[in-house]
Length: 440
Image (cartoon, rainbow, N blue to C red; front, side, top):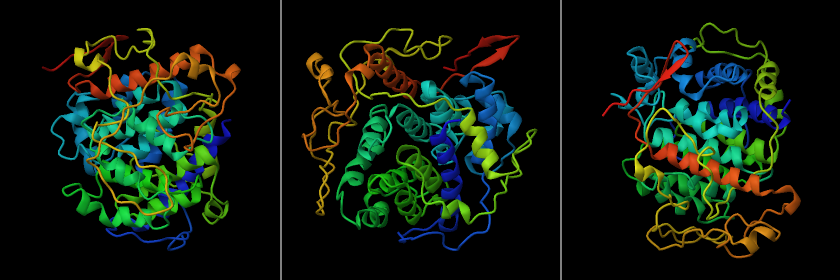
């Protein structure tokens, strides 16, 4: 059993319960724990879907099949999921089901739901999270959950939040709004009011972006993690205080923080009744009776984490490593080299204990690939252009083979291609044969 995934699953339930009372809040509230104190966990369809995805991983079903499996296992007629299910019933599978006639395609429902692929299928997390989130989302609603699952899956143990941000933005399309949000997330590091400032000024800085949208939700997850000092409890408390879609965001923040840095104090889960509470959405699957049983199911289906270094080199990975969907042809522009640090006008401020002024229009330098000499030296710096006082990761050279480096590069390339392709296709299986029609 993967203990890190077990702890992260327990933390997701804790975070969901902690954040639920603060859904819809427009201003930051500093929390020190549950408010009010609950007696049992909060139920959510995202956690119920984890049970379906756990069975999917155990049976090694393809990512293209997630739409049909979701239709068979979930009956959820709320928000964007209602539109996704409607399209699935019409015969449009993922990713077309989330893109077709969906006015809520940039919602947040896939944020927590797709994160589980970083645990269940770390080698293909981006692909599974892409087809998962595409069930009822499009554009940012797909890019951000898939990029987050990818980033968590490739990070080494005890990675910093800055490393998470770099791995996350490395695969985002250049048109993603998160590149513009980035400088505001990273400013004022070390300042105890940084999260409050960001949350309270979010609507004025990004007019037109709803606080329940995927851009806002992902921002609240990341702001909590960035200013948590590598502490899962602090991360989920900060994220919950931001409001918005705080049930999903706090669960996501708690799960990621725990997976990377260890669990919050046991009092959080200890104060809840041990019963697992499923929603009415779950069909044809008997839920576990206890929270422990639920966490054990997910953890037992998750492989142990291997050391992966998220960086790129000039050498191209082999075609078999970056194969996405052989049944479709990708546009040539999607196969071109993608920038890995966001838009050229983005600047990432250095960590500082003083409050700094935000400047989203300043220029920044793109990451340069490491030279052969740098690959042989220790420690390995995730961003070689950063100053030497930034966070580094020391890993013995004997543990990092060329194969591991190329596999890491291939996973980044694979995720980039996934998130830049047009969602104008769907894959169905007929008599054991996969058929992928494209809609022009």
